[in-house]
Amino acid sequence: MKKIYANATEALDGVLTDGMMIAAGGFGLCGIPELLLEAIKESGTQDLTFASNNAGVDDFGIGILLQTKQVKKMISSYVGENAEFMRQYLAGELELEFNPQGTLAERMRAGGAGIPGFYTKTGVGTVIAEGKEHKDFNGETYIMEEGIFADLAIVKAWKADDTGNLIFRKTARNFNVPAATCGKICVAEVEEIVPRGSLDPDQIHLPGIYVHRIIQGDHEKRIEQRTTRKKEDA
Image (cartoon, rainbow, N blue to C red; front, top):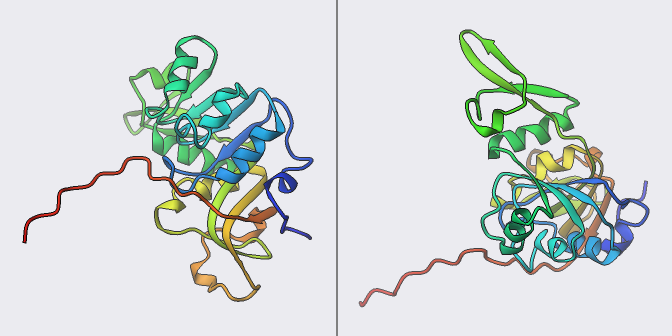
């Protein structure tokens, strides 16, 4: 089965449809599938629902799709760095489903494991719990959350082989693994594709069985918040 494609546009050919749900990896601007997001923008696909930790910033990440009004709904846990996101939400132009960060990660993981729902204490007694089933276990109240089953998963990894085995680098591992597993189709962009058999099996973070298409590309790797301190005098 061919998994390696020449570029993001080719890798998404025949996959994108209006109204689909996309699970996107990344945390802030770390480990986001920036090339695939750009290709989605260029495709003009509309009415998209994104399950992602955040929406990037105004001109990078999912933020570029907010600028073109291609996103109908966000399922996220943090949206604080995107002014256009805030404007669209307050204007009633964008739907938002807030999830606690751990709940969002578990909803993706559950979908990847074929689990339709699970109970958690997180969010009990808050607006997160409104409209959700409540159940008591051993005297404690829990709410039910549904697993996320996405039409497409897009992720960014450090290395891959031609079978789709992926290794993520440090913090970029974040939401990429659960996002990758919960998509009916998973497309991964990587920094390097290495020969089959050259990856240590014990170091593989995501088995190739979850990955359907791969591209290699150059990445900008922006820093979302740069904090420095003055050099102390010797």
